[in-house]
Length: 109
Image (cartoon, rainbow, N blue to C red; front, top):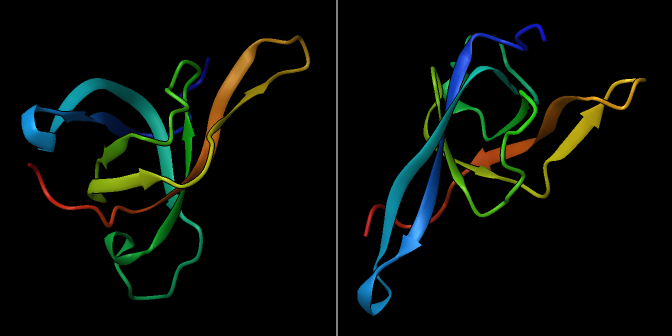
């Protein structure tokens, strides 16, 4: 399969510890992703966008509970709604697609 892009996306699970304290745990890294702003304005850096679309290789986790760290954008993006696996005409998984937004949760712990 051809790579979809040149960004690496790290999947960060929010894990509940004792007394409800949350901790971030990086579980997987997915090279070959493409994360692009849904809308853009000339002169505004990509990291300032509020909403993005992700194209990731097959097998990328479709959970909307994860926080993502994306090369060139930052480490606080959240899956916005369900991600979907797209299949080619032969029925093989081609890519995973969906929207991301700035994560508004609290920091680590």
